[in-house]
Length: 105
Image (cartoon, rainbow, N blue to C red):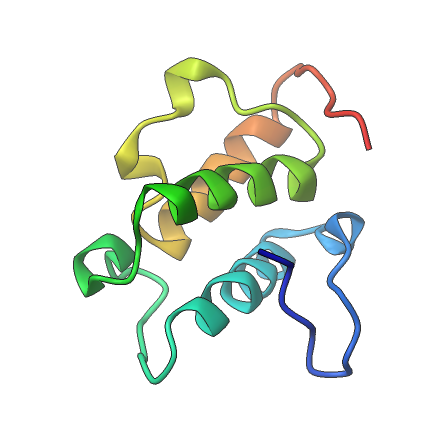
């Protein structure tokens, strides 16, 4: 599956995420096209909406790793860290705050 296009027709770049508000908008831009016609809040459990399967969950992990520029350690690969945009931005902030292994481009 290819990455969704931004509102100006370009592919979002992982380096665009410099801050938590950027994280939220990038995550939403990645998730919304995969949930057509569904409106959800940043705190809402996207898994409970019925559009997330195991393949999408892996795409989400890979997207986040590319976006924040680091691997997500095994201990952070828990469902609760990916249930909502709020949870994912909390995860990205935690990962940015500690020494990490960089993901190759």
